[in-house]
Amino acid sequence: MVRELSNEKRATFLRSALKLFVARGVQHTSTSEIAKEAGTAAGTLFLYFPTKQALIDELILKIGKEQSDYINTLLVSPLPVRETFFTIWDGTLRWFMENMDAYQYVQQVRDSGMVSAAAVQESGKFFGYYYAAIQKGHDENRIKPYSIDLIGSILYQDLVAIMNLMRIQPDPAKREEIMQQGFAIYWDGIKL
Image (cartoon, rainbow, N blue to C red):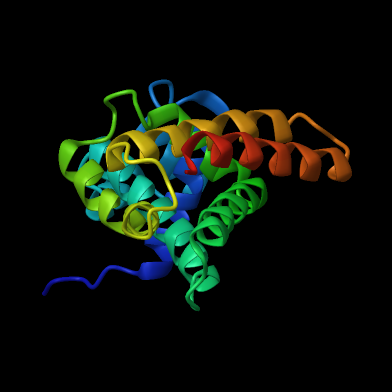
């Protein structure tokens, strides 16, 4: 008889992994430590995640989906191009500020080669709103005719730069100012 796996236990493993990966680093965290943090034996962890790679990949997919779901709730009505970009900008920064462990994990693994190519490809599907906003900007002749990949990459890197400034700024008013000024710099660089 095949035992059905619990979604609650899967979520516990993912929370435990995130906590330890952020505190110790992915490379310095063993699966046995994750299982212990989750209150189970290592063998139980392997029923859910046969390899550490599977755990790393599922965690990046979970974070990507949660972030994407949040941003998509903000983009429900048609917005002008600039407001669409600002909504993505503002929503991404606010989501990461509320989910700091997720931000730190993504920064740790995003360009490290730790995430499998399949997970990178799958997670890319969550962020179609980036490319839709860029395409809309091109179609309406509101942004420069730079490649979609270039504009998307610069958007992401600018978000990381602003996030790194915001997270060390204790004053909420100054964080808002940093967010607004960062967007102005980004938008001025791509708008026509």
